[in-house]
Length: 456
Figure 1: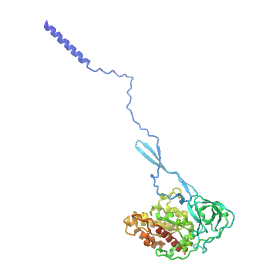
Figure 2 (figure 1 turned 45 degrees about the horizontal axis):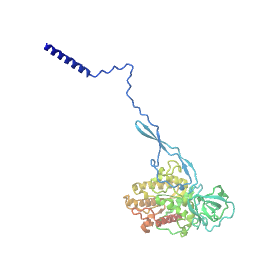
Figure 3 (figure 1 turned 90 degrees about the vertical axis):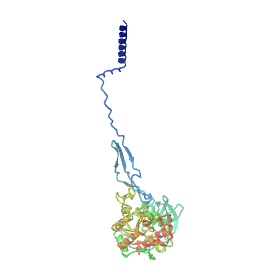
Figure 4 (figure 1 turned 135 degrees about the vertical axis):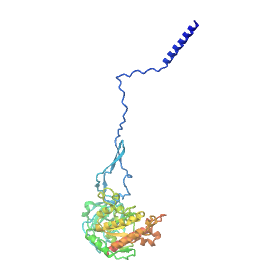
Protein backbone atom coordinates (compact mmCIF):
# COMPACT_ATOMS: atom_id res chain seq x y z
CA UNK A 1 0.00 0.00 0.00
CA UNK A 2 2.74 2.44 0.97
CA UNK A 3 4.63 1.61 -2.22
CA UNK A 4 1.60 2.53 -4.37
CA UNK A 5 1.22 5.85 -2.56
CA UNK A 6 4.91 6.77 -3.21
CA UNK A 7 4.60 5.84 -6.89
CA UNK A 8 1.54 8.13 -7.27
CA UNK A 9 3.34 11.05 -5.59
CA UNK A 10 6.32 10.60 -7.88
CA UNK A 11 4.12 10.59 -11.00
CA UNK A 12 2.37 13.76 -9.82
CA UNK A 13 5.71 15.60 -9.49
CA UNK A 14 6.74 14.57 -13.00
CA UNK A 15 3.46 15.86 -14.41
CA UNK A 16 3.81 19.20 -12.57
CA UNK A 17 7.43 19.62 -13.78
CA UNK A 18 6.47 19.06 -17.39
CA UNK A 19 3.68 21.59 -17.15
CA UNK A 20 6.05 24.23 -15.71
CA UNK A 21 8.59 23.86 -18.61
CA UNK A 22 5.82 24.19 -21.18
CA UNK A 23 4.67 27.47 -19.64
CA UNK A 24 8.19 29.02 -19.94
CA UNK A 25 8.42 28.54 -23.77
CA UNK A 26 7.83 31.91 -25.65
CA UNK A 27 4.70 31.95 -27.76
CA UNK A 28 4.96 31.49 -31.50
CA UNK A 29 4.35 34.87 -33.31
CA UNK A 30 1.14 34.97 -35.29
CA UNK A 31 1.35 34.32 -39.01
CA UNK A 32 1.67 37.54 -41.07
CA UNK A 33 -1.40 38.29 -43.08
CA UNK A 34 -0.99 37.79 -46.82
CA UNK A 35 -2.52 41.24 -47.47
CA UNK A 36 0.34 43.11 -45.71
CA UNK A 37 3.15 44.05 -48.17
CA UNK A 38 6.55 44.75 -46.58
CA UNK A 39 7.73 48.36 -47.05
CA UNK A 40 10.69 48.68 -49.43
CA UNK A 41 14.06 49.75 -48.02
CA UNK A 42 14.42 53.55 -48.11
CA UNK A 43 16.39 54.93 -51.07
CA UNK A 44 18.26 58.33 -50.59
CA UNK A 45 18.06 60.67 -53.57
CA UNK A 46 19.78 64.05 -52.84
CA UNK A 47 17.92 67.02 -54.23
CA UNK A 48 20.24 69.95 -55.00
CA UNK A 49 19.21 73.20 -53.42
CA UNK A 50 18.45 76.25 -55.55
CA UNK A 51 21.70 77.40 -57.21
CA UNK A 52 23.27 80.28 -55.35
CA UNK A 53 24.68 83.18 -57.34
CA UNK A 54 27.80 84.73 -55.90
CA UNK A 55 29.08 88.05 -57.24
CA UNK A 56 32.83 88.10 -57.46
CA UNK A 57 34.33 90.44 -54.93
CA UNK A 58 37.35 92.68 -55.68
CA UNK A 59 39.55 89.99 -54.14
CA UNK A 60 38.31 87.30 -56.56
CA UNK A 61 39.67 88.99 -59.67
CA UNK A 62 42.81 91.05 -60.33
CA UNK A 63 42.06 94.50 -59.00
CA UNK A 64 45.25 96.61 -58.78
CA UNK A 65 45.32 100.14 -57.50
CA UNK A 66 43.30 102.20 -59.92
CA UNK A 67 43.75 105.66 -61.24
CA UNK A 68 41.46 108.25 -59.66
CA UNK A 69 38.29 108.97 -61.57
CA UNK A 70 39.59 112.47 -62.11
CA UNK A 71 42.27 111.04 -64.36
CA UNK A 72 39.90 110.49 -67.25
CA UNK A 73 37.33 112.41 -69.30
CA UNK A 74 34.68 109.78 -68.86
CA UNK A 75 33.81 106.63 -67.03
CA UNK A 76 32.26 103.34 -67.98
CA UNK A 77 29.26 101.39 -66.86
CA UNK A 78 29.99 97.72 -67.32
CA UNK A 79 28.42 94.45 -66.17
CA UNK A 80 30.87 92.82 -63.79
CA UNK A 81 31.52 89.11 -64.32
CA UNK A 82 29.69 86.81 -61.91
CA UNK A 83 30.15 83.16 -61.06
CA UNK A 84 27.25 80.68 -60.87
CA UNK A 85 27.81 78.23 -58.03
CA UNK A 86 25.72 75.02 -58.33
CA UNK A 87 25.75 72.31 -55.64
CA UNK A 88 25.69 68.80 -57.09
CA UNK A 89 26.19 65.34 -55.53
CA UNK A 90 29.75 65.49 -56.78
CA UNK A 91 30.53 68.78 -55.08
CA UNK A 92 30.45 72.54 -55.63
CA UNK A 93 31.10 73.57 -59.23
CA UNK A 94 31.82 77.18 -60.16
CA UNK A 95 31.08 78.17 -63.74
CA UNK A 96 32.08 81.70 -64.71
CA UNK A 97 29.60 83.59 -66.82
CA UNK A 98 31.38 85.97 -69.23
CA UNK A 99 30.40 89.60 -68.88
CA UNK A 100 28.99 91.61 -71.71
CA UNK A 101 31.40 94.13 -73.27
CA UNK A 102 31.56 97.34 -71.22
CA UNK A 103 29.43 100.27 -72.35
CA UNK A 104 31.13 103.63 -72.12
CA UNK A 105 29.13 106.52 -70.74
CA UNK A 106 31.10 109.76 -71.11
CA UNK A 107 31.05 111.99 -68.07
CA UNK A 108 32.64 115.34 -67.44
CA UNK A 109 35.18 114.64 -64.72
CA UNK A 110 37.87 116.58 -62.94
CA UNK A 111 40.92 116.04 -65.09
CA UNK A 112 40.31 116.30 -68.83
CA UNK A 113 41.93 114.16 -71.44
CA UNK A 114 44.07 115.75 -74.10
CA UNK A 115 42.43 114.72 -77.34
CA UNK A 116 44.39 113.49 -80.30
CA UNK A 117 45.26 116.04 -82.92
CA UNK A 118 44.16 115.24 -86.44
CA UNK A 119 46.70 117.49 -88.13
CA UNK A 120 50.47 117.75 -87.76
CA UNK A 121 51.81 120.45 -85.49
CA UNK A 122 54.61 122.72 -86.68
CA UNK A 123 58.01 121.41 -85.64
CA UNK A 124 59.06 124.67 -84.03
CA UNK A 125 56.87 127.07 -82.04
CA UNK A 126 56.39 130.70 -83.05
CA UNK A 127 58.65 133.27 -81.50
CA UNK A 128 55.88 135.26 -79.81
CA UNK A 129 55.21 134.73 -76.12
CA UNK A 130 51.99 135.03 -74.16
CA UNK A 131 52.69 137.72 -71.59
CA UNK A 132 50.79 140.82 -70.57
CA UNK A 133 47.74 139.92 -72.65
CA UNK A 134 44.88 142.29 -71.93
CA UNK A 135 41.47 140.89 -71.00
CA UNK A 136 39.13 140.48 -73.96
CA UNK A 137 36.78 143.21 -75.04
CA UNK A 138 33.15 142.99 -73.88
CA UNK A 139 31.02 140.76 -76.04
CA UNK A 140 29.18 137.46 -75.92
CA UNK A 141 29.63 135.31 -72.83
CA UNK A 142 29.07 131.67 -71.93
CA UNK A 143 28.99 129.64 -68.73
CA UNK A 144 32.11 127.68 -67.80
CA UNK A 145 32.17 124.72 -65.38
CA UNK A 146 35.58 123.91 -63.88
CA UNK A 147 36.65 120.33 -64.61
CA UNK A 148 40.01 120.17 -62.81
CA UNK A 149 40.06 119.55 -59.06
CA UNK A 150 42.15 122.63 -58.36
CA UNK A 151 44.21 125.20 -60.25
CA UNK A 152 44.85 128.93 -60.58
CA UNK A 153 43.46 131.28 -63.18
CA UNK A 154 46.35 133.36 -64.55
CA UNK A 155 46.70 137.04 -65.32
CA UNK A 156 47.54 136.13 -68.93
CA UNK A 157 47.16 132.94 -70.99
CA UNK A 158 50.37 131.29 -69.82
CA UNK A 159 51.21 128.72 -67.15
CA UNK A 160 54.12 130.93 -66.14
CA UNK A 161 51.95 134.04 -65.62
CA UNK A 162 51.13 135.23 -62.07
CA UNK A 163 48.06 133.86 -60.30
CA UNK A 164 44.77 135.71 -60.60
CA UNK A 165 42.48 133.59 -58.37
CA UNK A 166 42.01 129.91 -57.51
CA UNK A 167 39.39 127.68 -59.10
CA UNK A 168 38.04 124.32 -58.00
CA UNK A 169 36.08 121.48 -59.55
CA UNK A 170 32.43 122.37 -60.03
CA UNK A 171 32.88 126.16 -59.84
CA UNK A 172 30.53 127.97 -62.21
CA UNK A 173 32.20 130.96 -63.88
CA UNK A 174 31.43 133.26 -66.80
CA UNK A 175 33.55 132.76 -69.93
CA UNK A 176 34.18 136.14 -71.54
CA UNK A 177 36.87 135.48 -74.16
CA UNK A 178 39.30 133.08 -75.76
CA UNK A 179 42.63 133.01 -77.55
CA UNK A 180 42.79 132.64 -81.31
CA UNK A 181 44.39 129.20 -81.09
CA UNK A 182 41.57 128.01 -78.79
CA UNK A 183 43.84 126.78 -76.01
CA UNK A 184 42.86 129.38 -73.39
CA UNK A 185 39.59 130.82 -72.13
CA UNK A 186 39.13 134.01 -70.11
CA UNK A 187 36.76 133.62 -67.16
CA UNK A 188 35.24 135.98 -64.63
CA UNK A 189 34.71 134.88 -61.03
CA UNK A 190 31.52 135.69 -59.07
CA UNK A 191 33.55 138.40 -57.32
CA UNK A 192 34.28 140.06 -60.67
CA UNK A 193 37.95 139.04 -61.07
CA UNK A 194 39.06 138.02 -64.59
CA UNK A 195 41.71 135.41 -65.32
CA UNK A 196 42.82 132.91 -67.94
CA UNK A 197 42.49 129.13 -67.84
CA UNK A 198 43.55 126.39 -70.20
CA UNK A 199 40.48 125.43 -72.19
CA UNK A 200 40.76 121.80 -71.01
CA UNK A 201 40.25 123.01 -67.42
CA UNK A 202 36.77 124.38 -68.13
CA UNK A 203 33.73 123.00 -69.92
CA UNK A 204 32.34 125.90 -71.92
CA UNK A 205 30.31 123.92 -74.43
CA UNK A 206 29.19 125.19 -77.81
CA UNK A 207 29.34 128.80 -76.63
CA UNK A 208 33.14 128.78 -76.74
CA UNK A 209 33.42 129.52 -80.47
CA UNK A 210 31.25 132.62 -80.09
CA UNK A 211 33.45 134.23 -77.46
CA UNK A 212 35.43 137.31 -78.51
CA UNK A 213 39.04 136.59 -79.47
CA UNK A 214 41.83 138.20 -77.49
CA UNK A 215 45.44 138.55 -78.55
CA UNK A 216 46.84 135.28 -79.90
CA UNK A 217 49.27 133.52 -77.61
CA UNK A 218 51.36 131.40 -79.93
CA UNK A 219 52.96 128.25 -78.61
CA UNK A 220 55.69 129.97 -76.62
CA UNK A 221 59.20 130.86 -77.66
CA UNK A 222 62.08 128.60 -76.74
CA UNK A 223 65.12 130.24 -75.21
CA UNK A 224 68.46 128.43 -75.37
CA UNK A 225 69.38 127.29 -71.88
CA UNK A 226 72.46 125.76 -70.34
CA UNK A 227 72.61 122.03 -71.01
CA UNK A 228 73.46 120.12 -67.81
CA UNK A 229 75.82 117.17 -67.95
CA UNK A 230 73.07 114.77 -66.87
CA UNK A 231 71.15 115.37 -70.11
CA UNK A 232 72.02 113.65 -73.38
CA UNK A 233 70.30 114.60 -76.64
CA UNK A 234 71.59 113.05 -79.87
CA UNK A 235 70.92 115.04 -83.04
CA UNK A 236 68.89 112.13 -84.41
CA UNK A 237 66.42 112.55 -81.53
CA UNK A 238 65.35 115.96 -82.85
CA UNK A 239 64.86 114.37 -86.26
CA UNK A 240 62.64 111.70 -84.69
CA UNK A 241 60.57 114.42 -83.04
CA UNK A 242 60.08 116.25 -86.32
CA UNK A 243 59.17 112.94 -87.95
CA UNK A 244 56.54 112.36 -85.25
CA UNK A 245 54.97 115.72 -86.07
CA UNK A 246 55.05 115.03 -89.79
CA UNK A 247 53.27 111.73 -89.13
CA UNK A 248 50.43 113.56 -87.38
CA UNK A 249 51.44 113.24 -83.73
CA UNK A 250 50.55 116.22 -81.54
CA UNK A 251 53.59 118.43 -81.02
CA UNK A 252 52.05 120.03 -77.92
CA UNK A 253 51.56 116.75 -76.09
CA UNK A 254 53.93 114.57 -74.12
CA UNK A 255 52.93 111.76 -71.79
CA UNK A 256 54.63 109.72 -69.07
CA UNK A 257 55.19 106.02 -68.41
CA UNK A 258 56.49 105.21 -64.96
CA UNK A 259 55.90 104.23 -61.34
CA UNK A 260 55.12 106.19 -58.16
CA UNK A 261 57.58 109.07 -58.68
CA UNK A 262 56.10 109.61 -62.15
CA UNK A 263 52.46 109.95 -61.12
CA UNK A 264 51.02 113.27 -62.23
CA UNK A 265 50.34 114.72 -58.78
CA UNK A 266 54.00 114.31 -57.83
CA UNK A 267 55.44 115.25 -61.19
CA UNK A 268 54.22 117.25 -64.21
CA UNK A 269 50.83 118.27 -62.81
CA UNK A 270 52.61 120.44 -60.26
CA UNK A 271 53.14 122.94 -63.08
CA UNK A 272 49.42 123.05 -63.91
CA UNK A 273 48.34 123.46 -60.30
CA UNK A 274 51.07 126.04 -59.47
CA UNK A 275 52.75 123.73 -56.94
CA UNK A 276 56.03 124.20 -58.79
CA UNK A 277 57.41 127.72 -59.10
CA UNK A 278 58.62 128.42 -62.62
CA UNK A 279 59.00 132.15 -62.13
CA UNK A 280 62.78 131.91 -61.78
CA UNK A 281 63.17 129.60 -64.78
CA UNK A 282 62.65 132.27 -67.42
CA UNK A 283 64.55 130.29 -70.06
CA UNK A 284 61.96 127.51 -69.71
CA UNK A 285 58.78 129.60 -69.87
CA UNK A 286 58.44 129.02 -73.61
CA UNK A 287 58.52 125.25 -73.33
CA UNK A 288 55.97 125.34 -70.51
CA UNK A 289 53.68 127.30 -72.80
CA UNK A 290 54.41 125.01 -75.73
CA UNK A 291 53.40 121.84 -73.85
CA UNK A 292 50.74 123.49 -71.67
CA UNK A 293 47.99 120.90 -72.42
CA UNK A 294 50.23 118.08 -71.16
CA UNK A 295 50.75 119.26 -67.60
CA UNK A 296 47.21 118.46 -66.48
CA UNK A 297 47.21 114.96 -67.96
CA UNK A 298 46.93 111.99 -65.58
CA UNK A 299 48.61 109.25 -67.58
CA UNK A 300 47.23 105.71 -67.60
CA UNK A 301 50.80 104.52 -68.11
CA UNK A 302 52.13 106.03 -64.85
CA UNK A 303 51.04 104.54 -61.54
CA UNK A 304 52.50 103.52 -58.22
CA UNK A 305 53.56 99.87 -58.28
CA UNK A 306 54.01 99.65 -62.04
CA UNK A 307 56.71 97.36 -63.37
CA UNK A 308 57.92 97.11 -66.94
CA UNK A 309 55.52 94.19 -67.46
CA UNK A 310 52.51 96.19 -66.21
CA UNK A 311 52.41 98.45 -69.26
CA UNK A 312 51.28 95.58 -71.48
CA UNK A 313 48.87 94.07 -68.94
CA UNK A 314 45.18 94.89 -69.69
CA UNK A 315 44.20 94.19 -66.07
CA UNK A 316 45.83 97.50 -65.09
CA UNK A 317 43.42 99.47 -67.28
CA UNK A 318 40.26 100.90 -65.71
CA UNK A 319 37.32 98.94 -67.19
CA UNK A 320 35.59 100.67 -70.06
CA UNK A 321 38.28 103.23 -70.80
CA UNK A 322 40.15 101.19 -73.41
CA UNK A 323 39.22 98.36 -75.77
CA UNK A 324 39.29 94.92 -74.20
CA UNK A 325 42.78 93.46 -74.25
CA UNK A 326 44.57 96.80 -74.63
CA UNK A 327 47.27 97.56 -72.05
CA UNK A 328 48.04 100.93 -70.42
CA UNK A 329 50.87 101.87 -72.80
CA UNK A 330 48.93 101.23 -76.01
CA UNK A 331 45.81 102.93 -74.66
CA UNK A 332 47.70 106.02 -73.48
CA UNK A 333 49.56 106.55 -76.74
CA UNK A 334 46.40 106.01 -78.76
CA UNK A 335 44.24 108.37 -76.72
CA UNK A 336 46.73 111.22 -76.35
CA UNK A 337 48.43 111.01 -79.76
CA UNK A 338 51.51 112.23 -77.87
CA UNK A 339 54.62 113.05 -79.85
CA UNK A 340 56.88 112.39 -76.82
CA UNK A 341 56.72 109.74 -74.09
CA UNK A 342 58.92 110.05 -70.99
CA UNK A 343 59.82 106.54 -69.76
CA UNK A 344 61.09 106.14 -66.21
CA UNK A 345 60.61 102.65 -64.86
CA UNK A 346 62.58 100.25 -62.68
CA UNK A 347 61.80 101.20 -59.08
CA UNK A 348 59.11 98.50 -58.92
CA UNK A 349 61.31 95.94 -60.64
CA UNK A 350 63.71 95.41 -57.76
CA UNK A 351 62.81 91.72 -57.52
CA UNK A 352 62.21 91.16 -61.24
CA UNK A 353 65.44 92.77 -62.41
CA UNK A 354 66.52 89.69 -64.38
CA UNK A 355 63.62 90.21 -66.80
CA UNK A 356 63.81 94.01 -66.80
CA UNK A 357 65.75 94.46 -70.04
CA UNK A 358 63.50 92.41 -72.32
CA UNK A 359 60.35 94.19 -71.10
CA UNK A 360 61.97 97.62 -71.15
CA UNK A 361 63.18 97.14 -74.71
CA UNK A 362 59.66 96.08 -75.71
CA UNK A 363 58.27 99.35 -74.27
CA UNK A 364 60.81 101.48 -76.11
CA UNK A 365 60.29 99.61 -79.36
CA UNK A 366 56.51 99.90 -79.08
CA UNK A 367 56.75 103.69 -78.65
CA UNK A 368 59.07 103.99 -81.64
CA UNK A 369 56.81 101.90 -83.88
CA UNK A 370 53.86 104.03 -82.77
CA UNK A 371 55.75 107.09 -83.99
CA UNK A 372 56.40 108.74 -80.60
CA UNK A 373 59.83 109.82 -79.37
CA UNK A 374 60.86 108.09 -76.11
CA UNK A 375 62.86 110.08 -73.55
CA UNK A 376 64.56 107.61 -71.20
CA UNK A 377 65.14 108.45 -67.52
CA UNK A 378 67.28 106.68 -64.93
CA UNK A 379 66.07 106.43 -61.33
CA UNK A 380 67.53 107.99 -58.20
CA UNK A 381 67.31 104.77 -56.14
CA UNK A 382 69.21 101.49 -56.43
CA UNK A 383 66.58 99.18 -55.00
CA UNK A 384 67.34 96.40 -57.46
CA UNK A 385 70.80 96.16 -55.88
CA UNK A 386 69.97 96.99 -52.25
CA UNK A 387 66.79 94.94 -51.97
CA UNK A 388 66.72 92.60 -54.96
CA UNK A 389 70.32 91.43 -55.00
CA UNK A 390 71.19 92.71 -58.50
CA UNK A 391 74.66 94.08 -59.26
CA UNK A 392 75.04 97.71 -58.20
CA UNK A 393 73.39 100.08 -60.68
CA UNK A 394 72.07 97.20 -62.77
CA UNK A 395 68.78 98.69 -64.04
CA UNK A 396 70.17 102.18 -64.59
CA UNK A 397 73.00 100.71 -66.64
CA UNK A 398 70.46 99.03 -68.92
CA UNK A 399 68.58 102.30 -69.43
CA UNK A 400 71.81 104.14 -70.32
CA UNK A 401 72.88 101.38 -72.71
CA UNK A 402 69.56 101.29 -74.60
CA UNK A 403 69.52 105.09 -74.89
CA UNK A 404 72.99 104.92 -76.44
CA UNK A 405 72.19 102.04 -78.78
CA UNK A 406 69.02 103.64 -80.14
CA UNK A 407 70.31 107.24 -79.99
CA UNK A 408 67.49 108.41 -77.75
CA UNK A 409 67.33 111.35 -75.32
CA UNK A 410 68.49 110.44 -71.81
CA UNK A 411 67.86 112.18 -68.51
CA UNK A 412 70.41 110.58 -66.21
CA UNK A 413 68.49 111.45 -63.08
CA UNK A 414 70.59 109.11 -60.95
CA UNK A 415 73.67 111.16 -61.79
CA UNK A 416 71.79 114.43 -61.29
CA UNK A 417 70.76 113.57 -57.74
CA UNK A 418 74.18 112.56 -56.39
CA UNK A 419 74.71 116.08 -55.03
CA UNK A 420 71.37 116.26 -53.17
CA UNK A 421 70.84 115.27 -49.51
CA UNK A 422 70.16 111.53 -49.36
CA UNK A 423 70.48 111.55 -53.16
CA UNK A 424 67.15 113.30 -53.57
CA UNK A 425 65.20 110.59 -51.69
CA UNK A 426 63.02 110.74 -48.61
CA UNK A 427 64.65 109.17 -45.56
CA UNK A 428 62.19 106.34 -44.95
CA UNK A 429 64.47 104.35 -42.68
CA UNK A 430 65.26 101.55 -45.10
CA UNK A 431 65.38 101.09 -48.88
CA UNK A 432 64.53 104.71 -49.72
CA UNK A 433 62.90 105.30 -53.11
CA UNK A 434 60.30 108.12 -52.87
CA UNK A 435 61.64 111.48 -54.00
CA UNK A 436 62.19 114.23 -51.47
CA UNK A 437 60.94 117.78 -52.20
CA UNK A 438 64.40 118.66 -53.52
CA UNK A 439 64.44 115.52 -55.64
CA UNK A 440 60.96 116.22 -57.01
CA UNK A 441 61.91 119.78 -57.99
CA UNK A 442 65.04 118.61 -59.80
CA UNK A 443 63.02 115.84 -61.46
CA UNK A 444 60.63 118.37 -62.97
CA UNK A 445 63.32 120.89 -63.84
CA UNK A 446 65.37 118.26 -65.70
CA UNK A 447 62.25 117.27 -67.66
CA UNK A 448 61.58 120.88 -68.72
CA UNK A 449 65.24 121.30 -69.66
CA UNK A 450 65.13 118.23 -71.89
CA UNK A 451 61.87 119.27 -73.59
CA UNK A 452 63.29 122.76 -74.10
CA UNK A 453 66.45 121.35 -75.68
CA UNK A 454 64.38 119.12 -77.95
CA UNK A 455 62.68 122.16 -79.46
CA UNK A 456 65.83 124.16 -80.15
